Amino acid sequence: MYARPLARLIEQLQRLPGVGPKTAQRLALHILKRPESEVEALAQALVEAKKQIGLCSVCFHLSSEPVCEICRNPNRENNTICVVADSRDVIALEKTREFKGKYHVLGGVISPMDGIGPEQLTITPLLRRVSQQQPKEVILAISPSVEGETTTLYVGQLLKPFTKVTRIAFGLPVGGDLEYADEITLARALEGRRELD
Image 1: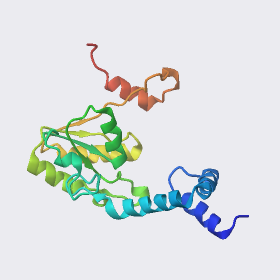
Image 2: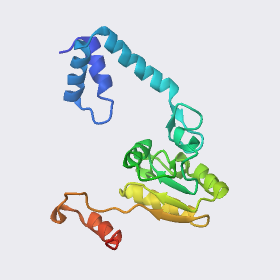
Image 3: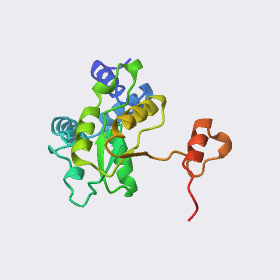
């Protein structure tokens, strides 16, 4: 159906998260229509990003330096650490411009079905960091899936002897209807309620 190089390109694009066969085909055909210089620039950007981006030695967020910009920033609050599962969560939280502290990226969530236990995550470095830095608060900002809840409870219990441990509130999205919300979301929304200002 496809020439071998095109089939390989589609196959590789399908490996990306959220890219199915049709999207992979559409992307591949788009790439082939672009000037060779643009395709080379894309390929070069991919290779450079893979070679130059690693993990921050402090918080394990993506970084092109040994210590990321957030950890190096003297204007960030050192007394609050927000624990997230993935660098995507850091990016999402940073877009809000609300959190002024620092982060710790676990590198995933505890998921025995996927063979991911606490030892595969950056929990030990987190405990070491918290015991050394003694922040006033650690905020657990992990998605409320079954695995996320397991991770939150596990990490929370380990951190409680060192500092105040909180978790982000969960609830209804803006514009959402109560009748379409699941029971867990509604329960979290009720738990996270606060007094009107």
